[in-house]
Image (tube, rainbow, N blue to C red; front, side, top):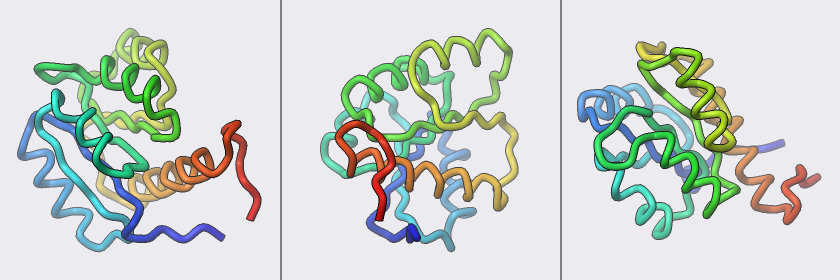
Length: 142
């Protein structure tokens, strides 16, 4: 049984402060900890400084866009699971993100802050933890 705790950290990245504030308000009762970043250029520093399990990122942002972040996170932090939350859901956009690296899930804006959203984040946390426990990325039994 996997228990989500406040030591599990999810980083939300979006250049729109209003989106980050809405997410913050909606996740007040979750079991994991949340961090927020409106400047995509700061994400890699935050990942270096904190043991983050999941990054939920927008795609269209100034500085580094979401596709660049996906590439960089996958290269340097393969245990981190990435969820894309974007208003741009054309097939070509989804294909670009998929080619950039592994993504755990893709949500389109506007999205519902419901049980499915939270459930996907919690599954991503568990997957991240299991990946970190096992050198070859296979699920650790326990």
